[in-house]
Amino acid sequence: MIICTGNSCRSPMAEGYLKSFDPAIEVFSAGIYPESSVSQRAVQVLKEDGVDISAHHPKHVNNFTDQPFDWVITVCDFAREHSPAFTGHVIHELHHNFEDPWIAMGSDEEKMDKYRQVRDQIKAWFRKFYNENLKG
Image (cartoon, rainbow, N blue to C red; front, side, top):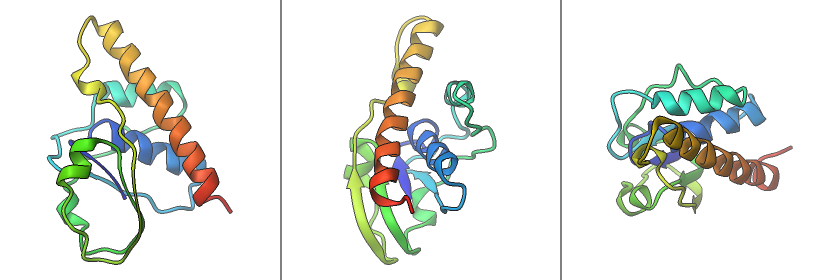
């Protein structure tokens, strides 16, 4: 389970990458205050890297709190501070704050550059996480 504020940028990116690393693992993402749709910029920058998250729909984290998870990972400080308690069995909790590309300022290209920067950080961090904790 990967959690961010709106489940429209960072957590869907992370979910998409983990699924691309290993389609056999079960990955979910959710938000504290889910947006109505996934960010089209997030869809675009992942598509540039061969990952399709266009079918993703933001979900509320409360829909998952009674389920068991091996890992619950928050990818922003807001989610870490406001995530509800999980009553299902959770083996590991982990946190890494990624900047929110949705709030990037500037021209469209500058915003896209911020999305690409965050995408690359998420990919690298979750590749390392996958290799150290899930692979094999």
